[in-house]
Length: 481
Image (cartoon, rainbow, N blue to C red; front, side, top):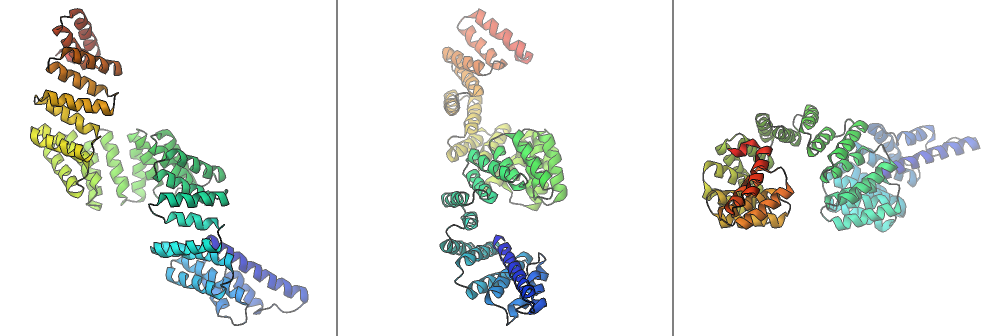
């Protein structure tokens, strides 16, 4: 599109020069007369059909210089591209480059335009070849670096190198900053991504895409407040931007505001009732709001549109867990694992449901499977520890809690759990050490005080036991029962 704009300007210059020369000399306009000049102006029309008709007349004219027909081919190619006639666009761009093969600078930009058409057609190899040829003809063509980076797929190193070069060559090009920010974000480097999106916004505060993508990066960093603000600004700048309401909703969701997220999802779904991610996202927000019935209704709707949406099965299973519908939950998690056997969280979730049904062996097998898939998955160790402690496998429970603490030394719940397991094993000193750690991390943990008081009683330290009991009852009167 950038090249086509340059081509249109070229035609306008030719038209004005021709008519101007005729006026100065008193002679009739050259190369086709007045109608020819009108066709040259119309060939640069933003209306594709008008441009195509006028450019075609110029191309077929036998008395115009080659440079005019060359620019007419390029402009008609752009008009075809704008209209969606991609094969015709390719043909015109190709013919233009053959008509004037010595014009390296203009041909470099035309290779970029043809590359964009190939990319639209899904022919990434042909697009890449055009971008490479463009840079061979003009190594300083920033747009070629930006567009080549966009089709390099998962090769983030090469894409980043191209975008660095584009920024160096054209530091005022917002597209280069937005593209580089997207690569950084894909690499998980949200800080550099935010810096690039911010640079693009500083250059062009009306760039809705930069605002939207910076919101994505803030959301990935867990900064829900800034994510919401950026998504809202993107929506203000471009109310018709695809998925902007959904982006705002996801940011609100990440920021811990499910109620507002639901309202934003409502707007996104109203615009596009078939937006599966928005429907599923609203279901997650309903689940976070403690409304499993509405959550399930949204998950059902999303699955009706995409029967292989793994996350919807998993989250519907979680809703069934909340409702103590163990068999329905197990069925959903089993479906998840049939579609994606590497979904470790589904093993943990199914294990919880199996444990609730009293099938300890099957539950432990699921927790084992989750740990094999993700050896650093804290929740799998924690759930297996709960179950092992429940069925009297105290030493194994202590080992699992120890693994949780090794992965997260500030996990108060794991210290409390291990302390209780040590208490069950009559390791009173170890129990007191762990329960003291739990209380230090969470001074409002009534159960940790209660369990430590039991350990103190065993050690005949009755005054300390009494103080812990008082603290436990003050924090939660239920521990007395």
